Length: 307
Image 1 (cartoon, rainbow, N blue to C red):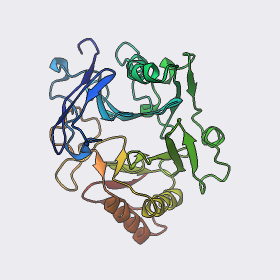
Image 2: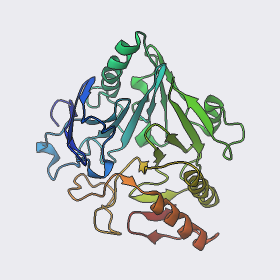
Image 3: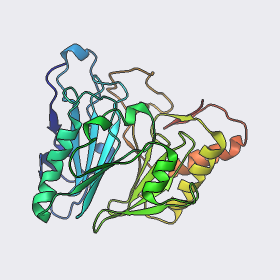
Image 4: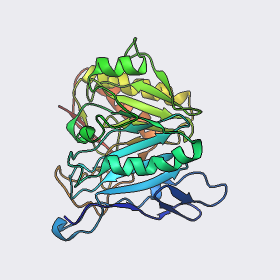
């Protein structure tokens, strides 16, 4: 693989291109965010030895929100990571599937992204690093952040997540996490993994659901907890404005019900990243219909996979 680098690619929105660069971005006036269904994500290569995509693709969703995707040739999981910036602190959600800071320069990339906000506010921003859940492809680069100035690394176990975000009634209670004139809502959703959380951002109206809901194989570790968590998300979405449900991977193709096999490093016809609330409700109906008996179900945009 060539020397790792970071790219900021032009991304087509419904009206025009939005061109992004480190610390700067220009957009069409009155066009505050990208159309996530039309983003051209880097999707790997048939021959990884000859591919030229960067280690990290960085897309600026709006002035204070970044979406990063890891190169599939670096790790086939190609997880998405999310950076939310407020006036006092920023939240990085997940650290990807590769530990090596040379091959995968995540800390350096995030620091560069934060520079413009720090310059605008005239002080360093505290960076909180948390995780959608405790699986290795979402925490591998934690060590790049450990011990760095102005960084707080949230623990990986469910009790550590509860304590940090103030969730004593886990998993029935959500909590507000304030970044400074930007409040995120943290929603416990165990089932895929015991420490799984969702994050709702009222500023973008995006609901980030980790590996619990995404266009791919929904691996269920705890069936009753998963059912309860999906119902919790459906109830939440019924009382909040949600534009998209955004997960951490893409494993489905654009052909309904057809996924790419585990280990695939080239997905030229992959599904769009976001799902809709209607698909979240459909998942909930499927789980309710299955009742207490875990079973595999192949749907258009996801596959229910009991472990």
